View 1 (cartoon, rainbow, N blue to C red):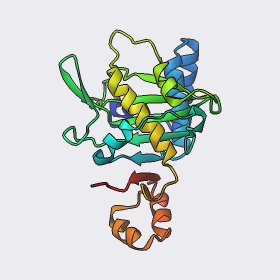
View 2: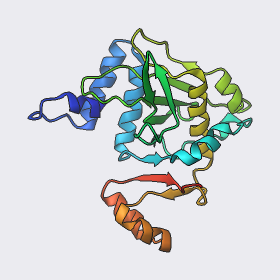
View 3: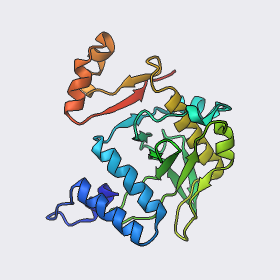
Length: 234
């Protein structure tokens, strides 16, 4: 939300820092009983405080992550941190998570996932590639319940979706389920070094892959690059 707001400002004006910006968004949402904006603002503020951690997903791994049957206890799905951005290729020809909406082809640029109620659920907010600075169309969001005895598949079947507004863009049910399944699977793979690799500066990638030296990870963190990526498959 803050990035979009910054793009809408005249060049000579500066956007507020993350704290004041999201605090105002949270207050406005509370006053208007806008649960969705409140949830997104809370998750985004947490994400900014964590220095915008991300996870890059390559197209080659998406089919594997979306086909898995998650007939396991939803309580096992633990976010690696309280807020995380899952990012996909911005090039629509390389992004398999695409759909048609009113004659326009859209694709999922990223998914912000965040913790709800200290582990009671997972909130997902979708960025569908808004490019214009003044494009504030809602992109849809949903909450996935987590509790002992409730399987992930059962939670998907009883998905809590926020009410759609007249201009709101919403993912088709099949694509929404794929995205949720993908996010849950990534949470299960979080600590598997065979699949997950820290994202380092491009010039250091070959040296890190050859040596595994953590100094390259630390260097990336100092430059604000805090993220992971799939080890490319195939």
